[in-house]
Amino acid sequence: MEDNINIEIKKVDGVVIFKLLEKSFDASIAGLVKGELTVLLSADDVQKLVFDLSEVEYCDSSGLSAILLAFRMLQTNEGQIRLAAPQKSVKSLIQISQLDRVLPIKNSVDEAVNELKEI
Image 1 (spheres, one colour):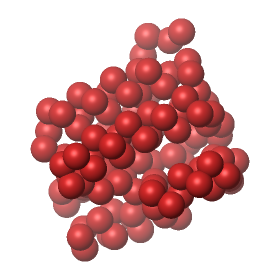
Image 2 (cartoon, one colour):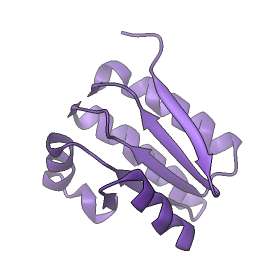
Image 3 (cartoon, helix red, strand yellow):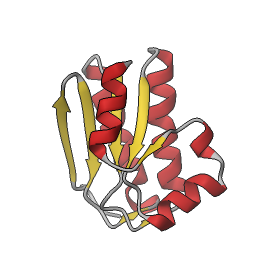
Image 4 (tube, one colour):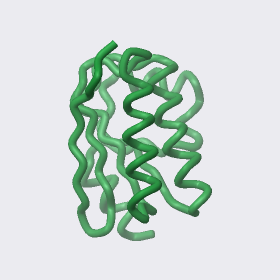
């Protein structure tokens, strides 16, 4: 198990962009991602989150559960989440598990940020 994960967090016009800089989003890092998201969403009054998946080539149910944790935390504060730029295999997993019904997928980070800015 790794002790750290590569992420990039930035804020654009009140929208927090959480970019996972890992090829594989699975059980080996899902707990660490959940920890980072919990700290981020608890500490800063975050209402709008874009989860940038552009670097992720593989995701399993552990990765999806980390994304769902962020979704649930945001929901309790009436916040919003968008998934941005998932690669084909990751997008397929999200659609097969029908999570795209609650987790809107956008083709790019800019598209996701612009949509959230309008809310």
